[in-house]
Length: 241
Image (tube, rainbow, N blue to C red; front, side, top):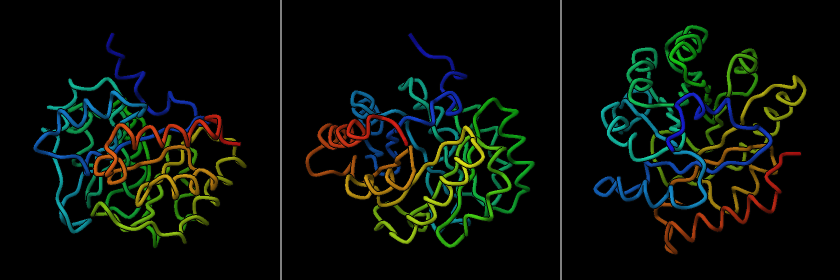
């Protein structure tokens, strides 16, 4: 039975569990349907969908039409990450296309408060992301207004980059602020995530791991790669302490 869109919002998922979100940016776009079906037949929890405009980041990806075309294939949450100069222009198109969570960047040109408000009005949960060079203090005033914080552990725009270990401190600091304020906010990490770095970001306080290359382009295959992530998550008893 298909789950309702409302139940797929990330705000309805426990922040005390660890989740795996394959980034379809690393999938084979010539066989995207099959890659999504193959991923959904593993232990993944949601799909992470990167949207790039060629301005905010030096690359282009997909538009609402692609999201709409793959929405019937999956019952899992669609976690849409807007790497755009003006995310306000695209909130409604992606919500209408089937997004369940929409994350935008602190560094974008639009009003942060207005963007949060518009996303919530679509019925989607809302995330705020920060680039590696943005200090965590910049997003602290908005922590109680969002459902998710996304820490980029690479410079956004391209898949397959190496994990920046200096971001571990930032992850820890944001997790501490979430705990201190007793907020129901997920802490997501994206960029260079594999089994080794995945363990480190969980230790630092992340509970949603975005993985692209290490899943879709893994030499052992997607199924075996997802199984290794599942073992990692089970080893933490699915709980952030």
